[in-house]
View: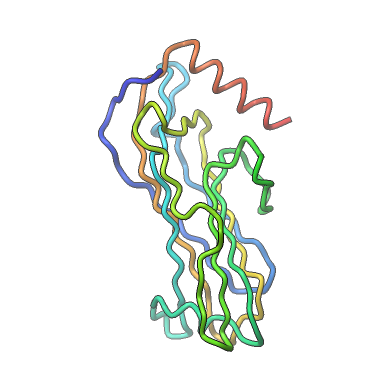
Length: 182
């Protein structure tokens, strides 16, 4: 299906959640990696999500339970290859590449990963998620009462490589991607 043009490398993006139940979107530009003329795509091998607390003095820590007050909440994050307009998509959406969730209880100081895939591992080329669009979109949301001066930072680390696809495979992926947009 695909032949590697590069070894694996990492792409990163962050979103910062500061308002309760308000989704925040980030964009990862793939224009330098995807080339229609050369049938060049991005093969996503793995996606890791990292949740951090950023306080009013811009100190970062893993103490995410201190971000919320007044009971439990959940942080959700998704990576898609079509623009969801800062909305979460359904789990069966063809544009969904990876997703994660974290339950946070700032009152009882409990943090637990949800039942979502965390991290998403696709494996090598024969199992990788092929992307032919110019951007990836990351949407994060914290559904909880956020403590004053606190921010939940969600980082995505995407392990990928540039690949060359056959004409048939390129067309199949492009058609699927276009169909998902309608």
